[in-house]
Length: 125
Image (cartoon, rainbow, N blue to C red; front, side, top):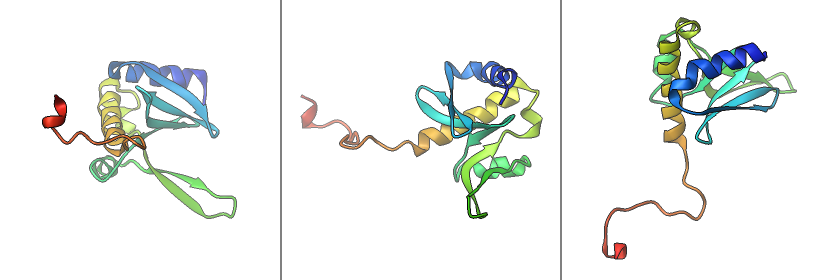
């Protein structure tokens, strides 16, 4: 992953707000508001996907991130490659990144010990 590629990703995703890219596992995680929604491996950006967005990534000709285990088998994560059409188009890159951010938000689990908001009630004072 080159510094130029990281700078390009930061520039393309700037409309999403402050973006942080943190090195990890031979690549880097892409974060917005401490929520990881992207993964950079080499010179490729992968974006978080889920049941809602995976069909859109597939229809655009994208592919999931696949990695190799030491025993030769492979696995995949729910991160899909930024479609080719968006590589040089900042507006398209932003649209795809928003899909990744939305998927990350849907996947976000409440912190242990926190309680879901069940709405107004007598406990609100």
